[in-house]
Image 1: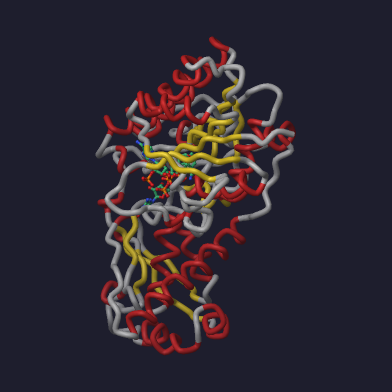
Image 2: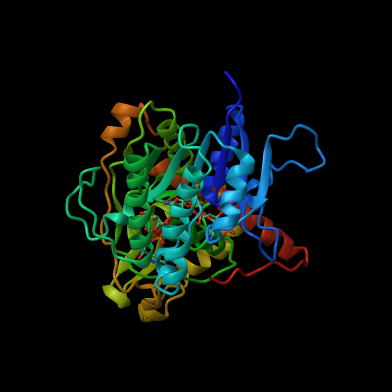
Length: 396
Ligand code: NAP
Ligand code: G4F
C-alpha cells in the first residue's frame, strides 16, 4: 500500500500530539500546522520532532493559523494530503466567553477555510477530512444519554462556533461529495491535557499539595458532570472514521458520567488521601479527612508523609472548619461560566458497531495515569527547589 500523507491542524495540542505519534507508527507521513508563538511550544511533540536537516523526514511542521485563508490554502496545496484532521481550535469553553469573535473565527470559519481549500484545489476526490466536533454541542441536553440523533443546544461561544463547523462539514459532504466526517467527542483527558481544564488542574494541584508545594485548590462548579475518556483511545476513533468507505458522524464517549467532586475524590484516593466535602454552592469546601499512609508512601514517597500528616493532625475541634489547615478544596465563583453545561453522557454504540471502536481505559485507569504522571512532574520541581533552583508557578 502506498504511504499515506496526513495533515494535522492543532498538532501542538493534546490530541494532535497523540494522533501524530499514532499515525507515524502506522507508517504515515505527517505534516502538522503550528502557530507562531513567542516560545517554542513543542513540548508535546518533542519526542517525535525531527530535525529539518535530517534526510527523509516523515514528520514536518508548517507555520500556520486557522484565521489565515491563504496560509491554509497554500499548506494544503503543498502537502496534498490524503487525510486532514482539523483539531485546531480555541478549545477552552470559559475563555470563549472572553474571546467570542476570535473563537468564531478560528473554530467556526477556520473549518470553512479548510474545506474550501480542499474544494478549490480540486482535492475533493483525494482528501478525506476529520472535523473535531464536540459534546459541547449538546449543551443544555435534550436527551440522556446523547447520541448522533440528539438535538444540539449550545451554551457557549465555543459551542456555537463548533456548531457552525459541524454543519459546514455536513454541508460540504452533501454539496460537493467530500469525504468529511464529524467526530462528536466527549471530554477526553490525559497526562498531557491542557493545564487549565478541570481534570488536569485537579491532578496537578493534588500532586503539589501532596508534596507540600501548594495549600489549596480553587475551582468553580463542583456539581457538573462529565463523560471522561482517555485521549489515547479517542484519537484512534478519529483515524477509524477516515478509513470508512463512506463519511459519517459519530459519538465517541464512555457512557459513564461523574461529577467534578467525585473526580477530585478519585484523584486524591489514588495517592492515599481521603477528601470529604461539606457545605453547598460557594460555601462548599473539601477537607483532608484521612490518609492511607502505605498508599501515600508508595505513590508519593515516605519523606513527604510528615508534611501531609501535619495538614490532617492540626485539625483542632475548637478551630472553625473554614480556618482549618485540612481544607484542600475551595470554590471560587470567578470560575463559574455565564451559562453552564451541567450534564454530559454519551452513547457510543454507533461507533462501536460501525467502526469497531472500543476503549481500553476506564475512568479509574485515566485518573491513575494522570496522577502518576503529575506526581512525577511535580517531584522534579520539588527536587529542583531543594537543590536551590528556581521553578515556575504557572498561574492560570
Ligand atoms: P488543545 O490541547 O487545546 O489543542 C488545540 C490546538 O489548536 C493547539 O495545537 C493550538 O495551538 C491550536 N490552535 C488554536 N488556535 C489556533 C489557530 N487559530 N490556528 C492554528 N492552530 C490553533 O485541544 P485538544 O484537547 O487537543 O482538542 C483537539 C480538538 O478537539 C479541538 O478542536 C477541541 O475543540 C476538540 N475537542 C476536544 C475535546 C477534549 O475533551 N479534549 C472534546 C471534544 C472536542 P497552540 O498550542 O499554539 O495553542
Ligand atoms: O475541563 P473543562 O474546562 O471542560 P469542558 O468545559 O467540558 O470542555 C472540554 O470538553 C469539551 C467536550 O465536551 C471540549 F469540546 C472542550 O474543547 C474542552 O476540551 O470543564 C469541565 C467542567 C465544567 O462544567 C466546568 O464548569 O468542570 C467545571 N469546572 C469547575 N471548576 C471547571 C473548574 N473547569 C475549569 N476549566 N476550571 C475550573 O476551575
